[in-house]
Structures are given as structure tokens and as C-alpha cells.
Image (cartoon, rainbow, N blue to C red):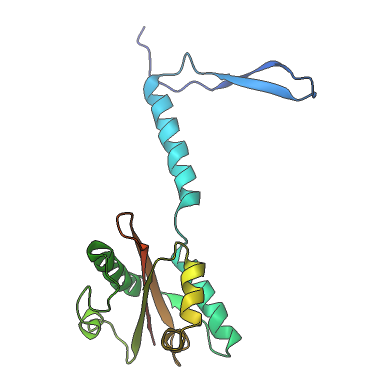
Length: 177
């Protein structure tokens, strides 16, 4: 009879009771195929990395929107095209280890293909979380003006790490109407 390579259910077996009254369990995996074990481990790692991943675009936009609303301005929405422009800038800065608006080329040429009448960019480095970076932009008059740009409706934010750089993380934000 041909044996099919189907996953078997993991069996929990009660291993005993501790002195505190808690029960312990163990999972018998001896009869599981090695490929299934590897797949389950990879799935568990991917799931765990999903929670450890950087903040999502909606969270960036939400934090920027909260700041704008606190100043009487409308919220902004995340925009994938702006995120791609910001990512290119953050990658160029991380690759060169410099904080420069021209690292990925002239800003006006980088946003020329987008439909907008106004655009602004904030960059920074050395802050590991977006909350820290945003706080620094809020207290800088030029960066604050970009965050509070009248008529802004869309935003893209990206960060790229470079462990060899003393900055460690490079940030870019592009905001448009």
C-alpha cells in the first residue's frame, strides 16, 4: 500500500502537573515528516517577523495626520508611489552613508512623474523608530512646515537601515497635494 505524505495532527499529551498546579504539555513530532516540521518552523518565523516588521504605511500616515489635525489641517493618506520615491531616497542615503536631499537625484526630477502641484520632502537619519524621527521633524521649523503643508493629501515614508553607518537608519518622507 502506498503511503501518502500527509501531515499528521500534532498530539498534545499531558506530561504532568507542576507543584504550582499548572499542567505541562509536550508535542510529539517523531511521526511528522521533516518537510512539514521545516514548513511549520518557517511559517512560525514569518508570522513572528510580521509583528517585528517596521511600522506600516498607514501607521506613518496616521501619525502625520494626527499631527496635522492637532494644527487644524486635514489628514493625509498613504500613497504607494510617494512611498516608492521616499524609499529610493532612503536607499540612496543608506548606500552612501550621507544625509542629502540629492542622494537619489534632484527632488523635482524624482517627483516629476507624479500628478501634483506642490511637493515637499523631509529626510533624516540616526533615529531607529518613526516616532523618534517624527518628533525631530516636528521641532525643526523647515521640516514642520513640510509636515503642515497646506493642501497636502498624500504621503509616503520609508526607512532603510545600514548597520555599518553611524546613523544606522535613514528616513525619507514625501508629501504632496
